[in-house]
Amino acid sequence: MNIARLDHFVLTVKDINETVKFYTEVLGMVAEKFTGGGEQRIALKFGNQKINLHQQGREFKPGALAPLPGSGDFCLICATPLEQIKQELEQREIAIVEGPVEKTGATGPLQSIYIRDPDQNLVELSNQIG
Image (tube, rainbow, N blue to C red; front, side, top):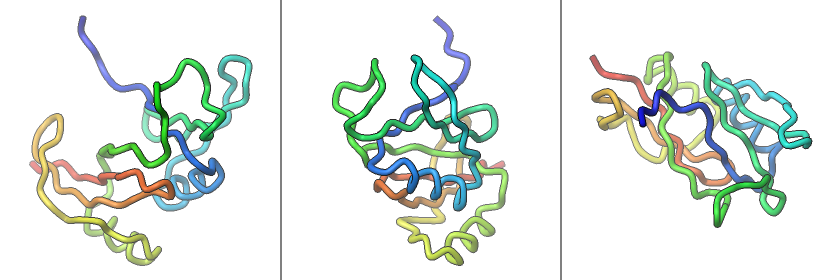
């Protein structure tokens, strides 16, 4: 087996509208409605990936065994310089949990800032170093 790339992942959230607002207004993603399994669904698109959203208590099947809001921890590689990201977060009064700090990503060193989304998922915003 040879895995080529990540297509999407799913976040279980308390309030889809609040989540969409955060990811579109703060992180610049695009909300997209789509039909999956005959049901209307919502995804957050960025680049050629997306985050599918599941409303807590109304998760789509099949799904995670024990889905919970706030259990996500993921890293997003950003084209915007980290200093500009930090300034934008501060202007929006988004608390920075940690950073900037050096971390190691899938393809090498990163400079990262950590924030939390409305469900308290940990979102790592990173620039690749070098």
